[in-house]
Image 1 (cartoon, rainbow, N blue to C red):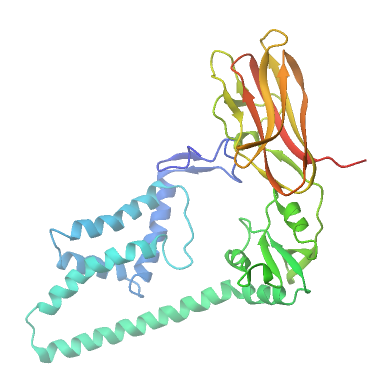
Image 2: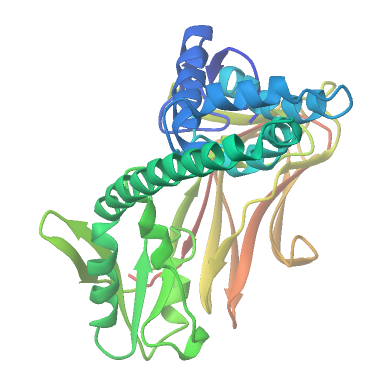
Length: 378
């Protein structure tokens, strides 16, 4: 997504790369993210409020012309990222990129600690002072660890129950889990198969494009959808359905052509190639769906204008093996009003299917929709 970059302005605000909600990142919003992370760093760095102030003091006291700018710069570059990048990230365990900046910050502070230890102070005064400081630091850190552990334990309270739900699943179960933006973070941690395909149950991630094929590959297993309710976690039985998938035009790759607004739907796009403006090449490619043995139809809603009859303008096909193998194709001649064109294939084994459109460099072509579905009798 070209909008996914440093700076200010709208992010994910167009249908080419759709997102649940567009975001307008402003300077004030960046300052708020920066403030939140620095306040977290002030507590997490050494385990007590004021840690950042102590770090600044130690770093300044032990300043090294050779190393301090480099070490400080590595941390400050992340802080600049807080300000300039739109996504705030997760901060369950400290500020964003805490572990990445921690080594450089500790090395910078250690210069000051080293200089303090070398300072000529009477041993009788130094030893009690160091012992007292260590005692205070350890006490503060232990209290902080205890409080934070309680918060994390409460946040992940549902994980133990969810794991028990998986363990209690009937024998020969295939459990599909669908994490999303509103799910608790630990939901993804459930997708784990230490015994591989010999596990009982087998746990897999739900993908709309492959769930039906996945269920069919385990005919001896009952498929379940893991779901969270107000009462806790439950398993809902699910069954394989005929494959039916509609591609988002903006998410399909291209080597030629462009995207234009859809004439009938404000939040959709039309893939377009215009003679004289665009060279011959693949107008649609790059998105595959996992299919199973059966008969499948790739359906293209398109129009071809601006050329004489019987001129070859477009070839439709279904590819696999990353485009190396063509399973079926159809050549379109002459002008065609907006209509549905189909490519039909038969599969004897599971394959990844990639609907594609080749533009021959002549005529004006518009692709309104691309669908892939199983041909079902009746």
